Amino acid sequence: MSSVVRKDEAHKLIDQLPPDATWDDLMYKIYVREAIEKGLEDSKAGRTKDVAEIRKKYGLSE
Image (cartoon, rainbow, N blue to C red; front, side, top):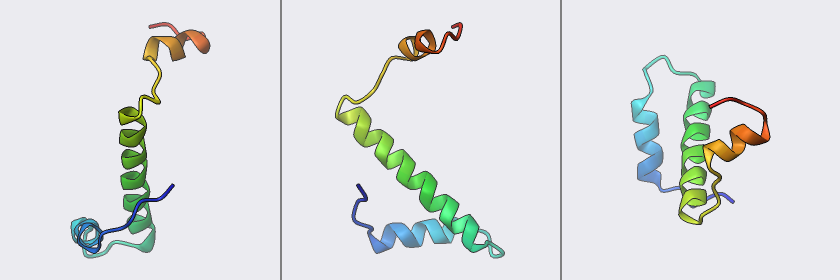
């Protein structure tokens, strides 16, 4: 679910880009921002798993 985009936040992302930035650079910034926001929402809603649980599931050592 996408959240409402505030224009001032979009401007901040654009202002952080270098003068020679590409559309791909902007899209990446947007993607990262959205992924972080979704992760924070999941964390607040308790939709997380312990790292040890995931490591055990995939047979990874700690």
